[in-house]
Image (cartoon, rainbow, N blue to C red):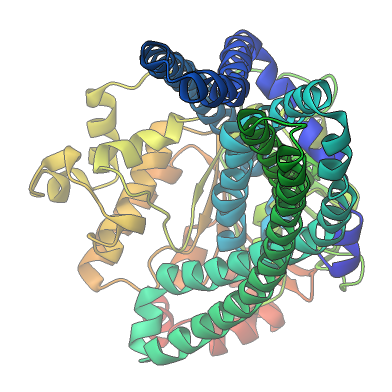
Amino acid sequence: MTGKERERVSPKALARLFPRVKPYLGHLAIATVCLLAASAAGLAFPAIVAVLLDTAFQHGNSRLLNEIAIGLLLLFAVQASLNMVQVYLLTATSERVIAKLRTDLFGHLVHLSPGFFTDRRTGELTSRLGSDTSVLQTVLSTNLSEFTRQSIFLIGALVMLTIKQPALTGTTLAVAPLVVGAAFLFGRMLRRASTGVQDMIAEASGTADEAFAQIRMVQSFTAEKEESRKYDLHLFDVVRAAVARAKIRGVFFGALTFFGFSGVVVVLWEGGRLVLAGELTAGALVSFLLYAMYVAGAIASLASLFGAYQEATGAAQRIFELLDMTPTVVDPPNPIALPRPRRGAVSMEHVYFKYQEELPEALHDVSLQIDSGEILALVGPSGAGKTTIASLLPRFWDVTGGRITFDGIDVRDLSLRDLRESIGVVPQEPTLFSGTVRSNIAYAIAGTSESVSDDAIEAAGLAANAHEFIVRLPQGYDTPVGERGVKLSGGQRQRLAIARVFLKNPAFVILDEATSSLDSESERLVEEAMEELLRGRSTLIIAHRLSTVLRADRVVVLEHGRVVETGRHADLLDAEGTYAKLYRGQFRAGDRVALEQL
């Protein structure tokens, strides 16, 4: 958030936690009763001390002294038990509430459209999930109970002071306006400073996350020092902002300490004069001082809690800002069900698209048809719009003009689940998760309620030419693949990605050229797997190689977001247009030689 946005932080943000707290109101009620009883026991302590001083000492009654000491021990034992129950209930409740909040936030984030993630760094989002929710957890588990306890101490001590010595009560309360004023002044400053620190921590987390995600690239360019330098710069900003916040906190708590204990000194001075005048007993003075310290301590604690409240409000605001974001691509109110069996026929009709309003069009009046079982290859120079088309079909973005149909139904009239379950994607850079080989293949149906058998997973591995290398792994299908599949070769990762699509068994396949960076043996195995995968399925291929183009029934040539040519390979070569130039300049020479030998 910017500085002006921080000024507009709404205190209502914390109130929005209540629906998540509501299921635990019974636990909170028990914790509150324990807290009230423990606080009452605390308030009884100064009164007992007065009796101890005035009766036991003044009259030399040792038996009464023993009884009072035992009574105090029992009182403190009860108080400790009550505090134990209260702390347990509040901590357990806060853990569950924050866990639900994190679950809701993560679940919401993964449903946001891909466009949202193009503008946000991953580290920033994980920081929101971690550090910001931890701030709220502190409020629920500690600050809330402390606020209640100190409020009870303040009110109870003031009542006892007023009953025992009204004249001294006014002296005690004289310090309150100073403390409250300091709390409001410094609390607002703390909120801004804390929000800034959290934002900078998110920036630093984003830098670290990027470096870890691209560690091979970092090390291949020997850029470790550069990444460390960037992270150090972010940390320098964090430390600078945190030190500034520490100064505010230091001045704040210093002022509270001075005002609070100055009030106690004044009360001690005035009470001492009353004792010397015989108007007040020593026990009553000590009791009054203890109550006065309760008042001063409560006011100081409440003021500091106000600062913590300001910090928590900023954290809540950032979290609920994310929760309030809506996906740009959503299910229709009344989705149409895709008829079965799904044919996988796709049509793009006069499609226009731009990623952002201020950016130029990525697609302009694009029309193309992919019939059931047909293989269509998209070719064109970089930036022509090939990947954009592949992203529009499963509705990662929505068209800004025209329409796309799947089996004759506008994709915007279908549920996202129905549409995306019908489409399988084999990316150029396969994406694996840090689980086992088995879990990565089974991920194909992770979004469904179906269960998958080991036989089905192995069948998918066999179809993708992956079974042979999998069974040679240390634990076979239960071998961990490492983060992003780093323990496997490129060809192995690609065959697992194909196995995943085999298991999904979609009617339509989007295939980004998957063999451009593989050795010849891996390329052969992947090509064979893809040949089997595409049999009988409608397919859109983003083609970078001639061998892929030859597999296609038709070729669509894109340039600057427009369809400039459509036809078969030989016909497009004869036309001597954009495709012929790409053939001569972009496709690998070895491919051209192989073609000429056919």
